[in-house]
Length: 464
Image: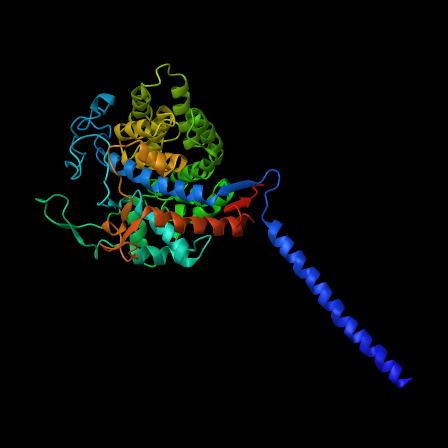
């Protein structure tokens, strides 16, 4: 009896291990099946091919730099004062540049035309590009989907010169060298406040920063929309603190509008309906504006004037109406203060977006000629349209130039890694696109509950 019992116990023990092994095999098989099908698109899901996204980010940086350096030629030349009138028109394209209101020309071009940097030279950083580069770098190095006040302040202090420790800069060969940290208005005030121990969003508090209604945030935060593609809600979440580092009120609303428009741009393509689709997305993005807010009224005025203008080449008429309505007079709750105001430059930027009608070169041309802080809309729309077109289509627009793909961040900022052989702080658009695609992938995974389809090299997520 005892022997028989031992035999039975031995049998059951053996069977138990066989059964456990069998269940393990089933479990592993189920996990493998789950892994195979976990990242598959369902009805209504959004899928983004990562190769296409990288090409678009490359196009964003290339287009933004073309727009930036073209717009810089006319920056602050025409600001509606008696000394700077009349405004530029289409007839001035290809003609000699005129002095900015502070009395100087620009060192890189004497002619109002597209400024292109050929391979072998570097696109130089400027405040329309270097702050977005900084924020992307902070996301990458901190492995963060949303930057904290400490990360932003530490990043600014590490990578942005103060007025005291800035290097000497000689604008022209004959110029007297002066210290230059390439910060102005609200950015400059925020940097000073950080030196005093303040953190965002305190750095845009009206009691501390009287420049918080200026243009700064709308030219430094567009990239957050691209890092949260097709999801404006997440784009606003991750951009809110960078925006409020320098902006409040209308300026913050306008910056948020640009972020949303860039987030939506993943669904835009270079076809004959691009201009129409852009205007449709502008209406979608304008939902961020309260109905009776000044930015909402400005947008409605500019869009209505464009739509009622039978001559879609006569952008100057809308620009001139903006000047009279908002700079000479006070309307829609806005009283003009400076040529750096967020509102006047927002209005001017809409002129080039609407009349440019999705055409990359025409949009930058109009932005460059529109007046005020002209490099801002030229850079913004150059980047947006560059993202929509992608790098290859941008290059095709300028067949006579082998466009440079390198970016010199240390022209204006400091303490960044060097990603290429040669000068300190030189990066490549392709490397930047690779890094920023990883940031976007992390945001899609953690903020949008998305996944990575390894087989098809794409992200899949839903937007509720």
